[in-house]
Every structure is written in C-alpha cells, then in structure tokens.
Image (cartoon, rainbow over all chains, first blue to last red; front, side, top):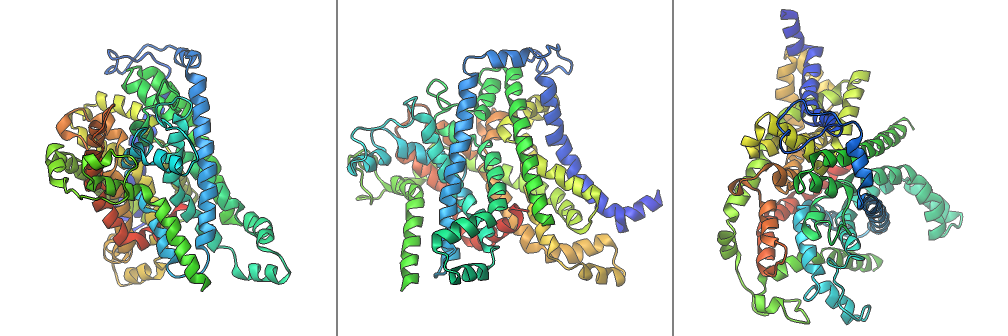
Length: 300
Length: 270
C-alpha cells in the first residue's frame, strides 16, 4: 500500500493517475452516453419508460421506422449538401485568404488574426445577425443585391423552401472561413521559401508554382483541414436553431438538428437516438481518418 | 509601394468579412424608425442608447449570470482535470499514453446535439436534472476537455525536461516539481487555453436548451432565442441584446488575439 502511495506521489504512478483522472471523466460523460445511446436505439423509449433502466427490446424497429420516414432521405441529402458545400467554399475562400496574407506587408499577421473575431462569438449570436441580414423586407442583403442589379425582386431567404438550406450554408461558410484560413496558413508557412526561389529561377510562373508546388506540398494539410471541416460542420446546431429551425417543411433540416428535434420536440427519443447513432458512427469514421492522416505526417 | 497596396486590400477584405458585426452594432444604435427604412442607412442619423433599457427589460442580468456560472464551472473543472493529463501526455511516451491520447481525440469530435439525447436520459435517471446548471457544466466539460488537453499539451511539450530533472536532483518530489516548476512555466499556455474554453462555454447553447427548463436558470443564448421568437420585428432590441452579450467576448479576444491564434495553430493540427 505504501509502495503504491509512493509511486503515486513520486513515480510512474503520478503520470498514470493524472492521465487516468481525465480519461475517467471522459469515459463517464462521453463514452458511456455513447454506448447508452446505442442501447437506447434498440429499445422502446417513451415518456413513461424514460426513468426505467430496463426497457422493452425492439430490435431494429427504430431503425426501420427511421428509414421508412418520408423525410429521412431528403434530410440526409440536405446534410450531405450542407457539409460538402460548406467545406468546399470554406476551404477555397480560406485558402485564398491564407495565400494572400502569406505575402509580406505591414500588419499581415495582425489583420489575419482579426478574422477570428467572427469565430469567437457564439454561433447563436452569429445566427441572429444573419437572420437580420437575410430578412426579406428590410434585410440589407436584399438591398445590396437589388441596388447592384443582381436580382430584381426581394428574395425571401429563410422562408422559401428552395433557398432556405443555402441561406444556412452561406452563414456557415462565413463562420468557418477564419478557422480554415488559420490552419491553412500554418501549412503554407511550413513550405520552405527557397523552393519557391529555385522554381522562380527555373522560370515557373505564379500559376505553375501554385499547381506544381503549393498544392502538392499542402496535400496533407488540406486532407486534415477537410476532415476537421466535416467534423465541425456536423457539430453545427446553433445556426439551424436561430435561422430556420429546419423549416419550412424540413427543407433546411439536417441530421444533427433533426435528431434533437425528434428527441426534444416530438419526444420520440428512440428514433432520435437512432439518428444520433448513425451520425455519430459517421463522425467517428471521419475522426479515424483524421487521426491516421496526422499520424502519417508525424512519421514523414 | 506594393506593400501599402496589399495593406489596403487586406483591410478591404477584413471590412467585407466583418460587415455582419458592423451591421449588428449599427442596428443596435439605430432608432426603430430608422431600422425599417428603405434604402437602409449605413450610419445612424440619430444614435440611440437603448442598452440599459434592453438589459433590464430582457432580464439580461439573470441570463448573463447563468452563462457566467456555466462558463466558470466548465473552465474550472476542465483546468483541474485536464492540466495534469496534458502534462502526463506530454511527458510520457508509451503505447498506453498514445492510446489515451487517441481516445481523447475521439471524444473531441462528438457533436453536442447528437450527445444531447443520451445525456438527457442519463442525467434524468440519476437525478442531475434537478441541478440543471451543474448538469450543463458536466456535459459541456466533457465537450471541451479534449480540446483543453490537446492545446495545453503543446505548451507542456515546450518545457525542457532538464528543468524538472534538476528539481528532482535537489530533492523535490514529482508533485512538488509539478506544482512549483512545471505549472508556473506553462502558465501562459494554461491561461490562454482556459480563456478559450471560457469563451466557448459562455456561448454554449445545445446543452442549456436541452437540460435547463426553469426560465430563471437559463443562459444568455437561450434568452436570445426566446427574444427572437417566430415572428420577431424588434431587430433593434435583438441587436442591442447581441451587442451587450458579444462586446465583452470581442474585447477579451482582441486583447489576447496574438496568443489565442498562436496557441490554436500550435495545437490544432497535431
């Protein structure tokens, strides 16, 4: 016993205890709910059995109900569209800005950091601001588009089913640009300067240098940023809550918002947890890819 | 000359990008008659100061206090539990520690809106729902703890091992060396990471909305959602609320900008 105490205070046990404390917390409050969630998705859960430990086992019935739901495929399609469009534009705009701020001028680092001001504010507040910008009658976006002649009529960004999802995507791209830009800047800073000088001496133009040097050198960074982008985009909830609440008629609904709606607005916790299990499984696969890509970077 | 052109272009990009924030501040200062004019004005003709009225009318003192409780609780627990773990992960290299780091990275990616369902049912069963703000703190800590550990770990890795070994030669136990030598040296990294965690938790929404049912215990994000309602027109009021809520966050960010950015870039990709 005293040997154990001595090890805890003054030996290997010290490191083990420190690491175990945090790991135990995460196992209790993250991993256990995760497992519990999988179990619930095979049970019948309603308001009456909410407090019970043993609930009736229903097999795959929750999943069958889920796949049969008329809105299931359109919401999954929305989720795919939301994730892919958000990432493509965040990455492209973030990359452009990162390249721009890579140039040598006064205050480049400082101004680049200021972009993160949008990232640090609560996403719900960002959603409130965008809701006001998108407002149909007095929104500033409609005014700008109409006064420059891009559109002729007011667009009802949030209440038109064909447009509402794209409005949330626009707001989400805005939110995600700074983080992408900063991470890509780190990757760009890692490319040796003399490589560019050598390429310039050999007569490579700016486009040639971009296609044949920058992009290949940035491949692992872009891969990591894309994985992180998928993970963060699937965490986006606040924008949906503040902008459209998934509406009108689920036209802008995505899986992570739908799961919450099923559980806490329809009180259909079993189906909510089934959606949640599907999406968590997907997120974990992406995270595995991300960890693998950073591992390879370390070895190289 | 080219460098000044670049500077001007850079400021232009930043201005376009931060326009939504400008629009928030501008709307907060406009009287409601000026808000609903077409074409809209881009500078308030008759600036209003409705901050005190909105603050009192919307009971922002209660909401902001609750947000502060959640953010402080989360930061304190994350720092207490996470700092030691970050140190152990930075110091020891073994298969087991790699596995711990891997598990922690995995738990960083779980979206709160998907975890809300099991956490609600679980907390309901063990009675944690009776103390809803504490329940939010526990859930939010599980969300931010991995990020805290990953970011702190990089600042521990920058401390030379020799400093700790010298203290050990002088007879200090590992606990003493940790608290007297290591933690003071990593102070900056720990502080910046804590501020980051604090700011994130100050804007927490999903768990507050899910786990807190009493009006007087709800956080500022939920208060803003209640204010917005389905058919809102009081955009001056909402933007005033947003300005009161966001301005302290923006000021703290501006003061620590350089350190936050460098901390993020060092930790995020590794």
